Image (tube, rainbow, N blue to C red):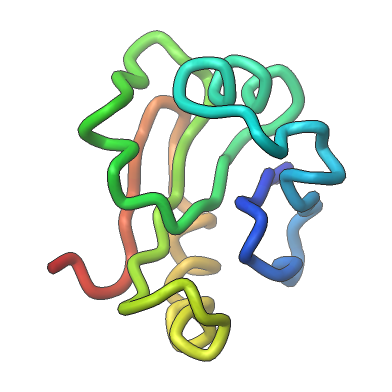
Length: 103
């Protein structure tokens, strides 16, 4: 599975991953980000908890995996990585899946 990651996440294990900056997605927002990401990736992995309120993925081939740490510090993200990897095994196009604290 090909995944694009937001700029704060590290590379995933067992998946072809590319940070947003290397994928040419850095600085893109909202609809533009999703349209560009789905040209090259199956899943966008991010910590942006607002995406479900901003975007409708129906009709899109891109899935979004949102990791919900208490902060964007890598030490707060790291405990959620195994849950994210599990979610990547079953995520489908057009889905938004969240792992971690959903407060």
